[in-house]
Image (cartoon, rainbow, N blue to C red):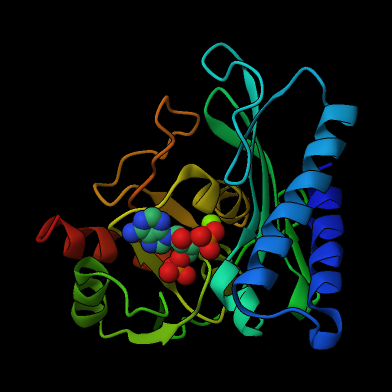
Length: 237
Ligand SMILES: Nc1ncnc2c1ncn2[C@@H]1O[C@H](COP(=O)(O)O)[C@@H](OP(=O)(O)O)[C@H]1O
Ligand SMILES: [Mg+2]
């Protein structure tokens, strides 16, 4: 279900970009609203008993007592989507007891769909690269890059950066300074299924469906470098 939703919303969003008829703020708003409307309708019809936390909607259901909560970002990387690049994503995760148990991330402009039930374990040679935000990343990510000698690669959208680790394009994605649960829940669900290290910057487990859905810091990286990344962070975090 998560994968179908991520793929379907991705098709809708490609439709929103069709023909270059909209631009700027208008295209971002249209994308956010249309993807949210469709995803909300699907979950109401198909999973009426589950609670839903989405960037673009009021909370649905009582998240404080619900065991099953869908955490959705209908369009992550709205500014990249508006700008016309390919680094934007749809995030769909089911959490149970605060952990993602089924997750999908689509990167529609690349024709890619990542799903926790089918993703391969990430292997192959390390690349010596780290994904950072288009806005340059944080002090902590720069420190990790310097300590491990990683080259920084700018990618928009949390989902697109996380999937760059899954694809094997980069070895790590280190974020601090703010994000919400919808920005990283489905990406973390896919990355965990792909055998990657995922934790808060202090090394603790990432838990979702908190009362205030703020998830401001995390690291996603290849297991081979996880100890070194956490040791580097220990000095600054
Ligand atoms: N300091 C911060 N506080 C809140 N949200 C942040 C943030 N930094 C990044 N984000 C959100 O995380 C997503 C990826 O950002 P970035 O590409 O800069 O890494 C974006 O989501 P949206 O595009 O869904 O708004 C962005 O809004
Ligand atoms: Mg987002």
